[in-house]
Image (cartoon, rainbow, N blue to C red; front, side, top):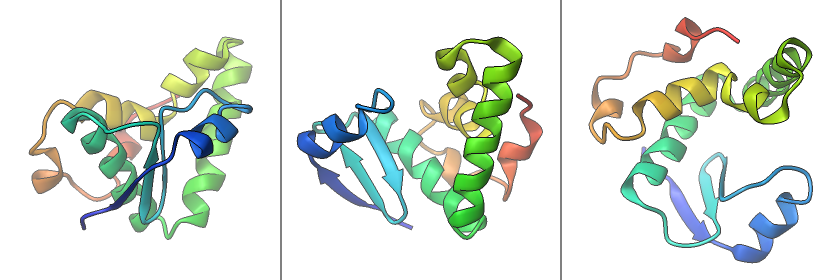
Length: 113
């Protein structure tokens, strides 16, 4: 699935009030502060696939759950974010621009907070 990309500095600034955001994925959209590198686009497209396989709402529930679990465990907001299994999968594979061709469904499940 090819995502719909939107460049919207005002939206990313608005979301950055809560968390620092360069790009954010809200199925089927990827909203970014500026033109994305191929790696950033790939990272966000991995999130599109994760959201699709979880039917969107469960993705966000699990995303928040993993974030707060990481926050309780590491006592550090940035580390908690990086330890979210969805983010681990995306960061580990964002430079592999062919990753989505061979990605297994629910691949994020092999990562732990």
